[in-house]
Image (cartoon, rainbow, N blue to C red; front, side):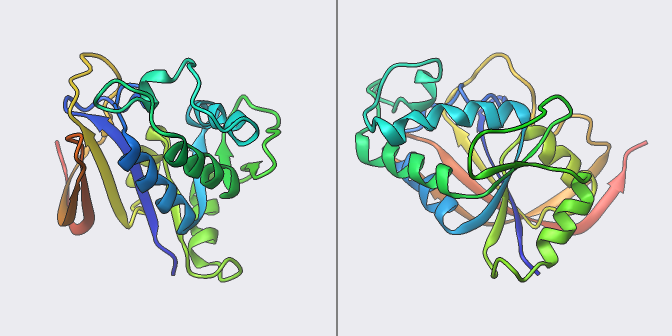
Length: 209
């Protein structure tokens, strides 16, 4: 069965705003490699529309200022170099994307499709399918991670903690009623100060009263 990985950026105070972090070239390359080694990524509407920012870089592969400038600046405050950004843009364009939305009627990104089933049915089918080989499935939206966590369908968490206190934003594990114990399997540290914590769920789960 294929593995479902929840991969998301967070600040030290738990904000999951993708624009609050300060990824550098190493982080862009890390996520480019992660996408290249996966087969499918699941997005909600907000994160999908944020990722559409990268589409123009395929036609004009130069770092340019934009509404997500803080998302792509390194710890030095300088825009990331072209190679890491271009690699990420190519990887995010290539990977098949399934978008879960109640408001979007269509998506025009060639590699994206709107989900036409509920998330549990869609993910169970993806995990069991052998049509796409054995590559991992990624989920990169906070709202979907919460839903899939409640359904016990996440096999691994990759939480990238940025050395930033945002002071605002939505927490990742909002409205989670169960106490869940995770097992740390490895860590990865970046020169800019960000750390990825890799966790697997254990069978220890209790409902808080």
